[in-house]
Image 1 (cartoon, helix red, strand yellow):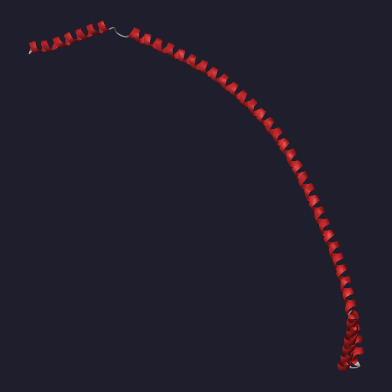
Image 2 (image 1 turned 180 degrees about the vertical axis):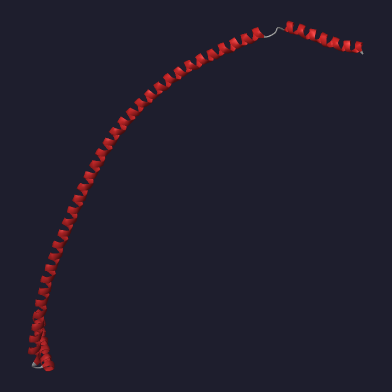
Length: 179
């Protein structure tokens, strides 16, 4: 059966060739040549395009690698700069802590000295105030004693007022008797 099919295929292909010859005639060979030339041109252009494409891809790869390398280099530089800045800030913070600690110690020392001076001056002023209070008390007491000693006694004053009253009282009587 396979042999019969092969024979039929040969017969049909022969018939197709005959139909081609009838339709196209002698021009078929020319068309075949043209198709071959066009096919060859297409193959050549495709291989040129492939080659151009490959070169462009290689160029793009090189450019990309260069750019990525440049970016990595820039990032590494940036990282180093930032690390150096961080380290510098750390050192500045340590110095600041040290100076702040020294300032705090000096301030505490000054506060202690000031408190001591205030306490001493307060004690000194307290002593002076107590002395002045005692002096004022003595002065008040001495003034009081002086006033007490120089005052007229009540009984003497009463006698004086009675005598004055009698004298004053007797004078109107004398004025009445004279009239």
